[in-house]
Amino acid sequence: MSVSLIILLVVGIILVLMYNSLVAKKNQVENIFAGVDAVLKKRYDLIPNLVASVGKYMEHEKSILEEVTKLRADANKPNISDAQKMALDAKVTSALGSIMVAVENYPELKANENVMHLQHSLNEIEEQISAARRSYNQAVTDYNNAIEMIPTNFMAQAMGYQRKAVFEIDETQRQNVNVKELFN
Amino acid sequence: MKSVSELTDFYYKVLYPTLGKLEKERKHLRYRIFLIGFAYTFVFIFTVLALQNAFLFGLDFFAFLFVVYLGIGTFIYKLLIKDYTHAFKDAIIHPLITELDNRLSYVHLFHVSQHLFERSELFVGRIDRMSGNDFVHGEIEGVKIEFSDLHAEKRHKDSKGRETWSTVFHGLFIVADFNKTFHGKTIVLQDTAQKTFGNVIGTWLQSNNIVRDMLVKLDDIEFEKKFVVYGSDQIEARYILSHSLMQRILAFEKKTKHPVYISFVGHAIHIAIEYNRDLFEPTVFSSLLDYNTAMEYVQTLHLAIGIIEELKLNQKLWSKR
Image (tube, rainbow over all chains, first blue to last red):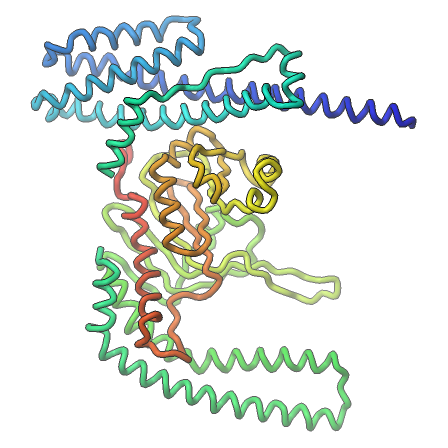
């Protein structure tokens, strides 16, 4: 076998490996986003029950409750993009956070078993969502690294792969984590 | 749970009369060991010399004889300290455990089952011999916990058919209920590849580890430096290893001062702490009243039982209550 044929073969194998690793990284991102989507859906399913349980008492917070209901309806629309889902998630997280803070002002709500149960379920789902977001961010970082680093960036360009966005964790959420730490 | 200083007080105050008695026994035993050891060595050498005159052994055979000498010697030593060890466990270790938490039971000659050790998947490969002792088990604040000394070994045979044993794990093995529901497996091991080969090659080797599940890269830099995590589910691994748990595990490892391996399999957390020696054994050649000796017993017990509070295993999530 001539030398040039061997070189060609090696280059071919490297190209295939690069191609496969990029596809694997893209699929990993999609796969994990499906997981994120599943836990987000779990949280959306809790919203009607929550709104019904606290709505009777919360006169002043009607607007937040309406907003949350609207956000849920938006999230359930077919064909929304991943970016839109991520934006909705951020809004729902902050709106639910405000509702939970408001519940503290209503002693009869705080003592209500149904509300308590909802609160605990929400906390648990929040932890799952946080885990899912972290997994997604890691998968996206791996993917973004691959499409920007030499030599896979040339292949990614040829394949038309674009950078993907990570879930931004805003300041208020970071503070939430810190408050939780204090009580632990 | 009692603090380390309360336990140390207990060791020196309440157990003192017993310790004094055991200390006397220890000195007597040490004397006997020297005496019997000396006599044994003398008889052995004398026999070998007598046989040497008759058969003229080669150098190989002398090496073999030396191994035999050590083997018999160890056997005699173990036989000699057997009663003393037993008395020590009954009179010191058992009361210490009960004092620490009276919901715990102690069985001297029992250990965590091989099934649990293998289920943990912390150490891959066949286990041919399993030994251990000092089994402690019980339920504290709704969390079932058990731990013991454990020594897992593997048998090898060379081309000449000679048998040798290698240690897979030797140290403290703890199994406890975990406070979150999960279905897959998450395994936390010491990060040797990244330490040895650097970040790029180390990570590449780890992501291609065929005996393990997927590599889980975590977002805590300190944790990532110290440990490598494999899991069957990326999201679940992060659900278990929250930021606060990662910090607590790091703090726990600092406290143990020994390599720690952790796995989450079948609703339980498995923790292996590699001491590479038998724990909770009485000293024979140094005093039982020595402060460092006492602290070792107290601290190791405190560490094992304290795991529930340390890792907050008693703070159950709603769905697990």
